[in-house]
Length: 389
Image (tube, rainbow, N blue to C red; front, side, top):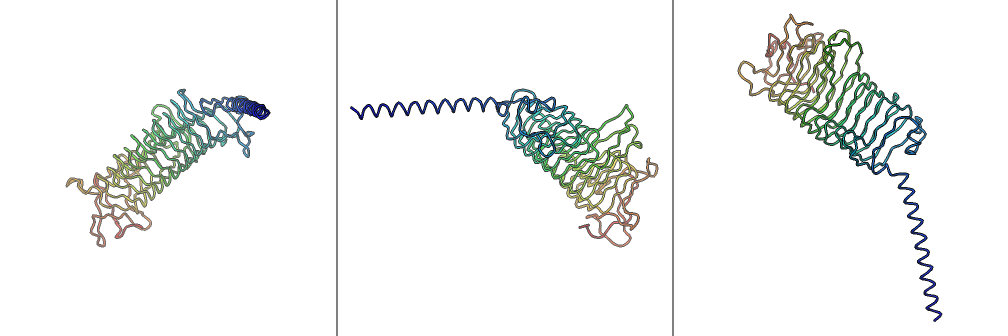
C-alpha cells in the first residue's frame, strides 16, 4: 500500500514538473516568437532611424562600427516587399537572409552615403535588390534568381557590386543615372532573357550636365544571355558630359547577339574575352573610345562591328576565326563605317606611337601587308604577326 501511495505521489510530481516545464517553454516560445515574428513572415518596412529599434528591436546601435543587423531572416511574403528601408541615416547590414516577395525582396531608397551593406542573401522576387538614390552602397555575395532584374541601382554613385550570382532573370544587373566612381566586379551573370549587365541612360529632350566618370566594370562573367554587357548612354549634349567607362577583363561569351555593346563616349574596353557570340564587340554612336587587347574568337559575324562612331582607337586586339562564313564582299573579321568626314574623324586601327595594329588569324602575314576592314575605306595598316598574349 505504501508503495502504491509513493508511486502515485511520484507520478503526480512528475506530471506537475512536466506541466510547469511545458508552461515555461510555451511562455518562452510565445515571447520569442512575438519578438521575432518578422523573421518569418515579412514584410519589414523601416521609414526612419527609430524603426530599427522601436518597431523591430534589431541588434546594433546604428553606428559604423556597430550597425543595425538584419540577419538570418526567413521571409516569404505575398506583400510587395520583403525588406524596405528608406530615409535613414543609420548604418545597417542585411545579411544571410532568404527572402521571397512579390515585387522587391530588398528595396533601399534615399539612405545616407555609405551606410548600407547587403551581403550573403538568397533572393527571389521581381527585383531581388533595388536601390534608389543611395550612394556608397555595397552589395556582395548575394544570389538573385529569376524575376525581372537581379540587382537594380539608380543614381547611386560610389557604389560597389561585387561577387554576386544573378541567374535566369530578364536582366542580371541594371544600372541607371549617375553611377560615378562605382565598381562592378567579379559578378557571375548567366542565362538572362535580355542582358547580363546593362547600363542605361537616355536623355533625348533635356540637357544633362551631370558628370558620370570612373565606372569600372571588370572580371565579370556574362554568358548564355541575349547580350553579355551593354552600355547604352544617349545625351543631347555629349560634349558637356565626361563619361569614362572602363570595361576590362570580362568574359562575355556564348550570348545570342553580342558579347559587349557600347554606346558611350570616352570608354576604355580592354582585355575582354568575347567568343562564340553573334558579334564580339558591337559599337554604335561611340566617340573617342579605345578598344585594346580584347580576345575576339569564333563569333558568327564580326569580332568588332563599329557603326556611326568616330575618333576611336582599335589596336592590339586578337581576331581569331570570326565571320568565317561571311559573304564574299563582307568577309573581313571586322566592320567599320567611319570616314574622314565623321564627327571626330575616321577611326584608327593601330597605335600611332609604335605603328602597331591588330592580329588577324585569316591574314598571311608578310612585311608591309595591310588588312582591309569591311564597311568603308578603313584599313589596319600595321597588322601584327603574332597574337597578343
